[in-house]
Length: 239
Image 1 (tube, rainbow, N blue to C red):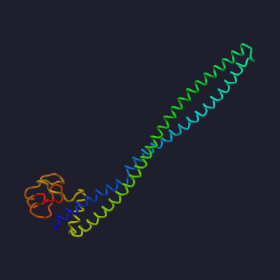
Image 2 (cartoon, rainbow, N blue to C red):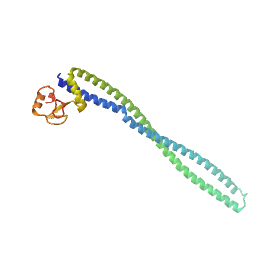
Image 3 (tube, one colour):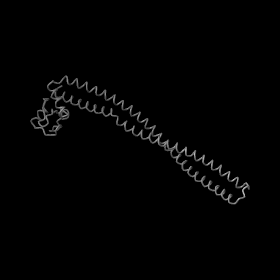
Image 4 (cartoon, rainbow, N blue to C red):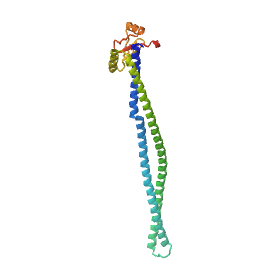
């Protein structure tokens, strides 16, 4: 294989290695997993709040039930005295009737408030069930994402190893001075070898003089772009 083709092949592996290295860096950042973790934390926060509110409401219901029992007991005591026939004082009877009526009104208000809270409890339980389902789904999703991420990391690392080995093998076949020139260009231009398409350098997109273009197409001699200085490669298999 000619030095030019070796350089072109080397360039291809270097590009692939860079792509894999960038991919590994992205995978190591685990951005996808972090996004799922954010959603998971949000669901957990919502769950804690909903469950806390549910506990508060359940305590409220217990208190209301106790109050209702006490009010019912008080009303029963007053009603027993009212209808026992033992109290004959009109003012006292009117006062007791008023107390009985007030207790009944309080009981009605408490029952309405308790019904509202019970409805809220019912809604909270439904919301908690939905949140728990979503939380469990996200937990499974994040575990799956972690496993896939680790598999990809292992695969990319293996790919990097293969590319590095190929690069080392090709570098051994390239003339030392030419390899140094390649590395210098790669540092400055990112790509040291660029393909000629039509009559243009794909590195800087400038036209290549006809005399130079003719030599590039007819031989494997190392030729440089007059404009950007990159090594020019013409793929005869495409022509």
